[in-house]
Length: 219
Image (cartoon, rainbow, N blue to C red; front, side, top):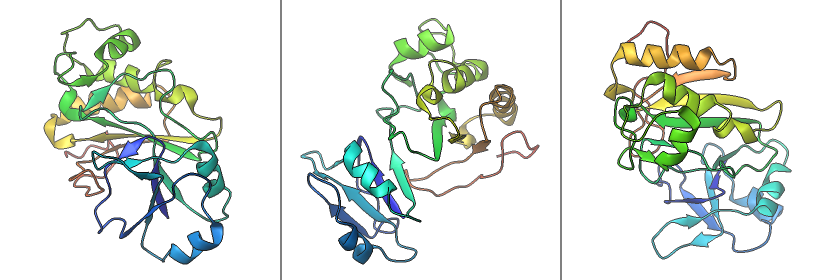
């Protein structure tokens, strides 16, 4: 498996991806890629390392080369929220390759019930435009569902046939009744192949509550 980004990310912990390969410009050499890959050990790929420590993401040509390798799984971070739990999406986001098989859209439940402002929402003006909320109003489950699955949300650029999953992180920060309302609103859109809840720690895959939202279990 390859772990990478089309934007910028902090390097993953070595326990997640033990090795990072900085490609520079140009597509990766497939022979060298196969030499570096090891069973059960994801390989992190990036163009280079920036002054702030973040890894510079791959360009479309590099991603296309990876996606052409038979049997290779590529997990690509294609968006960010500047450290906020919620965001509004610009027209070019997420930065997709056009050949993705699935898209996981992550939102933080800690933003539910919070005021629509820059403390809790990245690009609050875009979130307001997508949901009809006014600045400062509380973010409701219905509004968040509209931001995620509505016509101005991240699914608008998803290629036909690709799967879509909504992952509601920080599930421990919202009441079960609120999470069920959000689940019902998302599932009612008919656009999601799965709706999950989780509390990911350290930004990397430690799930404390993986079941489907709305399944009757409390997080």
